[in-house]
Amino acid sequence: MSKAIYSKNEPFYLNGKRAMVSLGPFSDKQHCPYGCAFCYVQDDFSSYEKLSEDGIITFLKDRQDEYSIIYVSGDTDSFAPPRTKRGVALLLRIATELECDLLFTTRTTFQEDDYRILRLVADEQRRKNKEFYACISITRYSEESAYLEPTPIPTPDARIAVLKKLKELGATTVLAMRPFLPVVKMEDYMLILNKTEGFVDIALGENFYFIRDGKIQVRVFPNGISEEVNCELIHNQKMDFDNNTSSWEVWDSKKYQEAVRKRCDELGVVFSMHSDDAIAEFLHSKEGK
Ligand code: SF4
Image 1: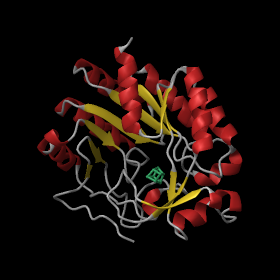
Image 2: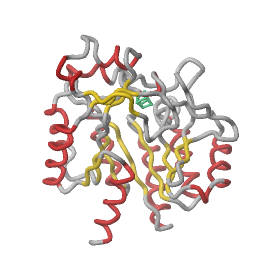
Image 3: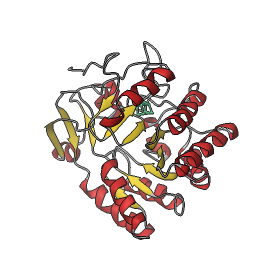
Image 4: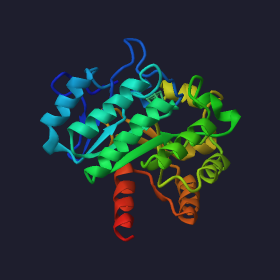
């Protein structure tokens, strides 16, 4: 293990383009209120610092020249209960106190008073001529793969309803079907795309990373890794979206990528395996309208 150590001085991930911030670890024992089987933090994705909302805003203001978009995402779901209201309030503070494109990621559902605040965030971003991306993660659909997103994560249908609502209140909606997993059937991804037709702007995939014999492997492949999947693994890869220096096994999901891309093209949805590329393509297509 070679966890990158975040500190009070370097509490979050900055890569020159993107600042990734979060509410930090949920507790000393649990990095996230949710417990996805494939979550990278279990193996070696680094946990960010736990700062107050004031601390997060100060960091973002002090380092403004080092990024052009803020992600509230990364090492934990900052919107999962019981922190939903704190996460939503943080988005509103970012929108009112900074002037920057903004993206947040979650698997949670929201209540009406949360939606009222999210609408204010969308309005404020629009007033400042900045983007507001609402990214909902749905990694599987069928019951047989429900173990990948265990309770209390809301059902895929509940999260699909959240996407619809976020579109209605003015956000650019992002469906994150990531990572693509060899234990999830292709039909799941097609079903999710079909059920979100008309209210998703961008769809994201991602290759699946895990460390050999690590916690993710045990949870994602409870019956072991099949020979077919074993042959499709790429070894000794680094993550380009985190500072950890571990060597990861990566499942090459080309077949899934091609099928999802084809369906997204039919639906008029921007698709990419990387959010930076997806956003660039989305903005480019928006200019052309
Ligand atoms: S919601 Fe995200 S951070 Fe939380 S356990 Fe799942 S993958 Fe990890």
